[in-house]
Image (spheres, rainbow, N blue to C red):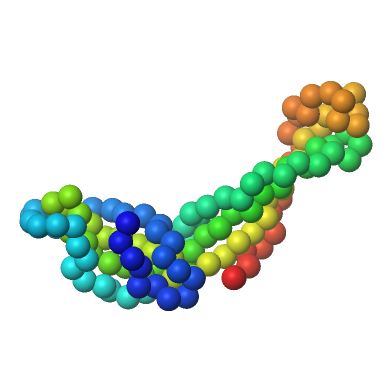
Length: 125
């Protein structure tokens, strides 16, 4: 994987897509141009481990999501085609919760009835 130029949170690769250049590039894979930081639609690039707890007949699942809204945009010659690659230039996280009802209470039965969900606001890191 190529090294990113984004300096704020490190070389977190987000995604690659065809640059729409209708020509082939030759030679080894290489960066051709760095367009700097650009705004992107919030892109969720990672998830934390799922944690579970039971209180009475409610099971709560919680996990983290990690996202970016700005990325360092780079034009690359990759496998003979032109691609734009994006590397996170900022970082956000939030915690998600899901609530499940358990039969028989106290987590002794199946927790298979969905009872809702919530999430904290995105926070910058």
